[in-house]
Length: 236
Ligand SMILES: O=C[C@H](O)[C@H](O)[C@H](O)COP(=O)(O)O
Image (cartoon, rainbow, N blue to C red):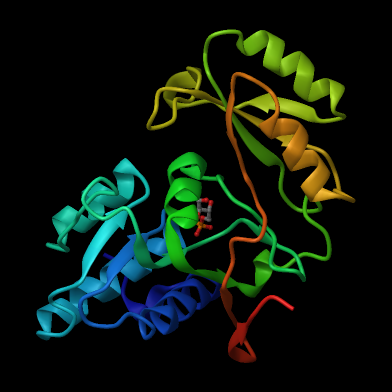
């Protein structure tokens, strides 16, 4: 267990952003629980509030098996999109955020469920440390692309044809990484992406590509923590 005193600065900023976003959760809400190390602080904070007898009627929709396991271990009640097809508020992390609050997500492999939950949400708050801010998507992070195992070599050629330097993500022991759906991920280094919407449209038109990590038009609010404090930004 990490104590507050041995947290690195980056981890502290992740926690501060996540905890601030939890202030937006109201009693009775259905809350999308994002994935990754920043979103995990949301789950922990929710559990701590429940222990104080607050927000006890909030239910969470996890965006990955990892988040589901964490939430269950902390006693946070969970539901599904089948039971609650509309989510009041989702709080999730991101790998890269541009000035228009477009995102690259999926560094932890949860991009498909994260996008499904984001699209089902009335509000999506993204929580990051300031190191995730970027002038242009693709500058700091490759775009994860989730593909069906069937025909994966064809998808690799297609992605290279779009100009990406691709790496098939590896799991434990050098075996191909598998998502929660059993699919593969190609991390696609495009370099700074001039028109993310056009790239997203090309990826979405390709059969066999199940999801990509470009999240466009889905951020309602960004909470970013840095040495200067915690700041809220909305799309302009
Ligand atoms: O698939 C993983 C998610 O998109 C994460 O939200 C993203 O990778 C950020 O993760 P972290 O908060 O650990 O930096």
